[in-house]
Image (cartoon, rainbow, N blue to C red; front, side, top):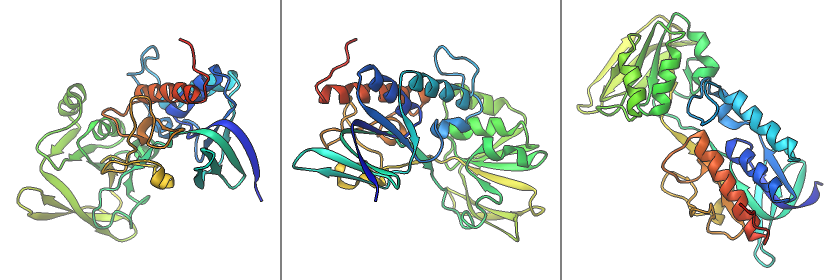
Length: 316
């Protein structure tokens, strides 16, 4: 049976939002713990190039979040690799019980900053060839496609940036975009359009893939006419990278939070959810921009709000 540990604050997720929250919680002298189920730093550690975090030019996700972790721990933060299995709230006392296989944490406040995972595109064969030709991480798998052809599904910033990254390895990168334009920021879109190794198929989606042990054919569908065409390749000569958005890790929270139509947590500008004492920060919440800097900002605000909720506001 797990032990029960009392805390002022439990932070769930150790990405930029959670690490920022830990830094601000330490400044407020809150007895807190950060719980992370996978890798400290979150999805950002897979990002090979970060050029838009102010004051830290030309870095990568691992280096940046490693510095955040060290800063939090230097201030006394406790970060533990534990998988949160359940979150309960005692309505009578207003306290939360956060359960992991190792312990149960009784706390007055919780910040949920679990981020989001890759959304699947939904084409036939996607699950079958997952990890065997279909990937969701260019940084992880790009090297396996040296000298080969890759298709990148998506038209947003992530898809465009990953397409550019894949040109380091692949002979040809084809972006498959459902609409008639890229949704990426203008500067990123221009880089894609100017890169001679990248071509774009607009008004197109991948309907299915097929093959033996590895993929050998792709069926494309025109999103305007519905017309399907199948192209055949040598087995294992190409890969498909999917970048069509993220799925927020909000399923544990149940009725404790209000979600938008995509499953992201709705908060106010103080990161407060509909449940008193429960805050959300980072990519898990509804917001117009998902970047490292906005996640860090969310974490700082959430910890400050939690401190105020506990009657210990941070000055300055």
